[in-house]
Image (cartoon, rainbow, N blue to C red; front, side, top):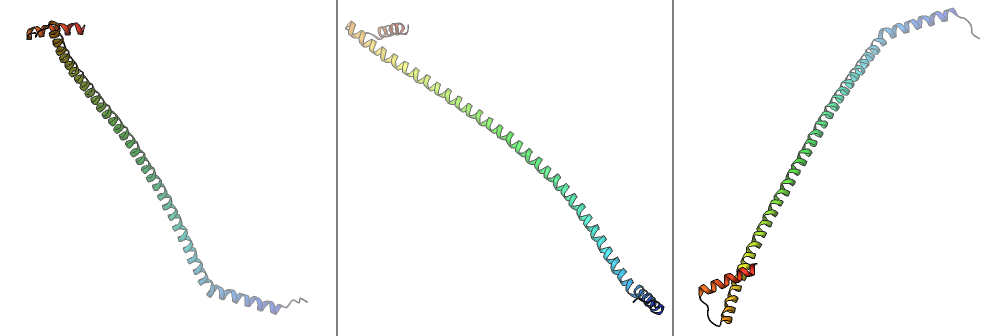
Length: 160
C-alpha cells in the first residue's frame, strides 16, 4: 500500500523548496507590504480613536463645567429675582400702608371738620331758638347785648 519511493520524495522536496523560494521572492514582499499598510492604517485608526476619545472627554468635562457655571448663574439670577421681588413686595406693602394711613388721617380730619361744622350749626340754631324763646317768655324784643348774654349763659349750662 504505502511504498517508500526515494525519487518521488526528492522531487517533492525540490518542488516544495522551489515553491517556497518563489513565494518568498515574489509573493511575500507584496503581502508583507499590504500587511504593513494594514497595520499602519489600524495604528492610525487607533490613534485617531484615542485622540477623539480624549477630545470627547475634554469636551464633556468642559461642557460639565459650563453647565455648572450656567446653573450657578441661573441660581444667582433666581436668588436676585427673589430678593428683588421681596423688596418690591415690601415697598408695595409699605406704600399701601402709607396711603391707607394718609387716607385714614384725611377721613378723620374730614369727620372732625364735619363734626365741628355740625356743632357750630347746632350752636347757631340753639342760639336762635333761645333768643326766640326768650322773646316769647319776656314778651318783648331783646337787644343785641342782652341776646349775647342769654346765649352765652344757655350754652354754658348746656355744655356742663
